[in-house]
Length: 383
Ligand SMILES: [Mg+2]
Image (cartoon, rainbow, N blue to C red):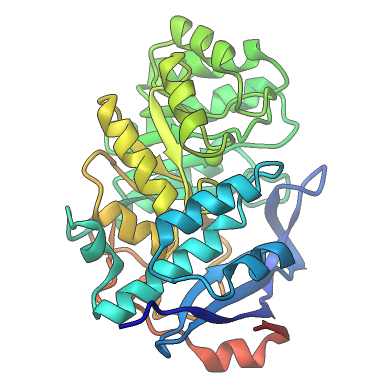
């Protein structure tokens, strides 16, 4: 049989409306704001092949025209070659364009072999415990006080979640961040694993140290990306690890295999962060999972989505699925294009706080194409 070829690339843009959400002081963090709406755009990326099988990925953004030109005519089974060619071709950028291509090619392969992606990767587990990952704190009556965060953590525990992650406030006094760690820790610390992700909001290393010491007192599971080095300083986080006992989770903001390994070797993190979007799709994430395994460390994937469910199902050295972002007053934040058990909303976990792993071919879940048609913005095709 002749090698199959990629014949056509298509991407469908559609929009979704999130009620009662706005942004905070600088426009970056999405926060609760009653009466306001957000209108994010999504992309369904589709790779057509000479076998008549189409690989798909939901996310974004679309790859550049150069990447599209490169793909036409390539063998869709050669993910490793395509990963390496794109890594070289995109060396001046953050390489996030690899993600839609690679995930769609895994979806294609699963459909050809009539198997879920996790089976092709080599299965390890049948279900995944999730942590509730909150929206950032707001000043608008939602997650607006440490008590509100503690109440929400207790609510998540009642739903079944075994773990809870705070995204704190933007531009807030550090004393309130410290108070939040104590309030949530005192309320549910004996019942849940707790994490805090300031998402690089703190001005100084000393602020990170203050919150880290509070995490020590409350027995937090990890402290993630605390301050405005942007999450990339190996030396700064190595020093932080010398002063606190709470494990650090870094490397969400560095990209790809070699930089992650350098970060580990230089002592800059305890948990390793990886993600299909940042690190070269499923191919890149599995490289990072195995690299971490080689160092005796755990990898924790950034954010949810079907691709991550498949990866986690095939990784031993990982602990949680990030289900988010969630908020006590905003029930629907994602476009409802998958059945609810595969959509990352607050209530969509089982009584033990686990999420399901798809068992259909490829990414393994039927898409509600009527919803995408109803919210359609435009479609691009290259062949
Ligand atoms: Mg993070």
